Image (cartoon, rainbow, N blue to C red; front, top):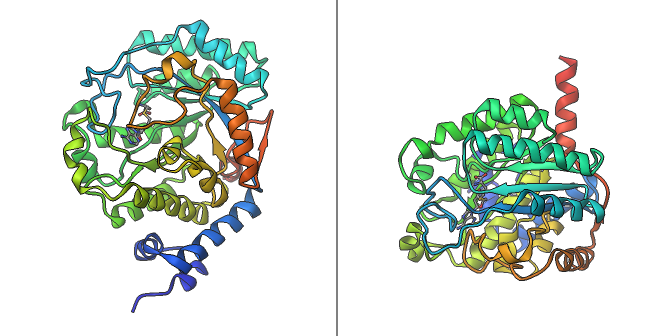
Length: 366
Ligand code: SAH
């Protein structure tokens, strides 16, 4: 017989087998897992949540990921690209409402024009906020020189999901060509970390062909790479994507949701002081999905502050919530929701990953 969940939770470190047992937990054992992860969150982070105002500034993408609604090949989608002024207005909204940070996200494009545009925007965002607004970038794979330029212009966090750390699975959910190369994605994460970004990654949970062993491997990768932040959410099929042909093989949405909560709880137990996002995709399945994630370990929320008229077009998956709210609606709704989760929103702070600070200190000592 394998080890009990109770005895596993008393360990300091976990084997892949332990992680699979944790992912399998049901009933009272799952309750124990969630109790442990909430305790750790409370102890290392407190019952707090920080905002990153999310600006989805363009859905134009050069890639063709087989799961993603904004993939280049999807012709059933109105493409948009916010003007610089619209982006700056959204940043100003975040600043005036004392969000500590914003996150700029878009489809993936690599070009000198994109590099310059983002560099310029970063300078202007820093300027309009007197250097106070923190900026996370999530604009995909780029050359190290580009990452460095943006870092020097003021971006200090970067989110690049590895999507799956199992290379075979990665290749099943992406076209097999140079533009969708597993090794490049890993290399990008490494260069982000080397440059000095607080580096975040994440995976989709409940993908076709994905096993619990794959998810355990994802968690081990995050631990071994020593990430500072994580954003992971359930995979939700999109009708206009190639992966839809495998919809019959998927776990029911409820189970994907449940598995995501377990992934968050386990990661919190493994990496006590990193930043973990309660992702929007959770709410697409459960109306209070993000609150549940906050209760069991997440500490970051990304209220959408993209101007309303564009939101409907950033459809990564079907049933994306909140696409018809305004930025003000999002804030008051999230405030109320967070207090329901017995947590408190912290305003006017960057909410940096404590893990990153600790990692920097130990690096300096060497
Ligand atoms: N292209 C940028 C970010 C935009 S997409 C980048 O790669 O950094 C943001 C995230 O949405 C992706 O990393 C992916 O994990 C997630 N996503 C895409 N399609 C999805 C789907 N069908 N279900 C759930 N999440 C999805």
